Amino acid sequence: MPLSTATHQDNSDPVTYTCTCPAQTEGGYVLLFYRYWANTPALPLEHAAHSQDPYALAEYHRWLASDLKISGKFRIAIEGFNITLGGTQLAIERYIQACCTHWSFAGIDLSTPLARDSYFKPTLGCACAFNGGANVKVTAEITPLGVTNYAPSSWANIISLPPAAFHDLLKKGDIPLIDVRNHYESRIGYFVTGDGTVAMRPAVRRFSQWPGYVVKHVLGDDKYKKPHGVATYCTGGIRCEKGARWMQEALSNEEGGSNGPVYTLHGGIVAYQAWMQGEIAAGRKMPEDSFFKGTNYVFDARGAIGAQQAVSTCHTCNKPESRLGKCEIPGCHLVLVVCEPCEQQRCTVCCEDCRQIESEQQGALKRSRRICKCENDRERSLWGDGGASLGRSKARQKTSTR
Image: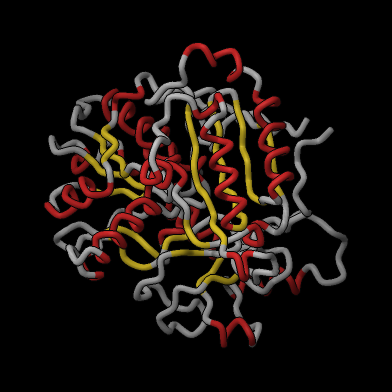
């Protein structure tokens, strides 16, 4: 029986939605959490055999989501799990209760409400943000790095900082800061350091391009070899788990390599936003004290969370805006910053070449669509004319939905 129970979606997920479920009156939440079995706190040895059967764990989450009418994305692998889901407040409470007694969460501190919030990272939302389905898949990796079978030589090689400590690190303003997310995410929100320096924001479109970016733009750059190290961050922490460690190993292994520390933000931007909200509510900080500026892109139909003053502009009219939309051309799914008036006029396209491609294909037999100029320019800004290449990487395994 297939484990995927999601409604068919387009090539890219929606970035807006309307709640039509009981959460309208009952309230609802979205959770974002993950676990690598080998990382601290490691899965207790008595459960090691269970971890080798990802299909059984996937079936458990499929059954639980169905029973509680929860929707979301569940990625289960031999190395761990990566889950984001939404439901009514009551359904989310019951889901967390069930997880707290399940073997796959053994060893994680979930003993208090604060500890559970720190791990599951609840934010406002509901099942409707996931197009009404629980998409449960067994995969080769819980988030694809693009380097087949990569596992950190040591999970202890980077320093994971809680939000308060990460804030203090940035306040010093003397450490290189790299955003590990994709370019359309960092366009609407990003960290700055205490001296106002904006994080380096790679123009990558997917996480599997991260190793290539490190090889092309980080290795050989002296600013990443300084003794005080490098700081990294992502949405919820998972991409930094392997991405920051891969970078640390590459920096250490290159000729004249760096032994400076590599820091990550534990729990990612979601955790930092929650911490900052608590600081503001307690009167210890003002909104302008936040080193995260803008809004936090999320991979569900909410589009982004944590509204602040816009740091981006509408793709069409150039007015300050953080609202997300998509290129209007059929067959193009690029996420763009689009204000509501421009979206209503249906006039937003990623570039004029995209419009030209659509014109060229009118009445023609269906065929592969060539890359439009704006995407081609972005790729060339990253790799030049040679493209991204890692000699030791191989194509990653396909996702299984057995």
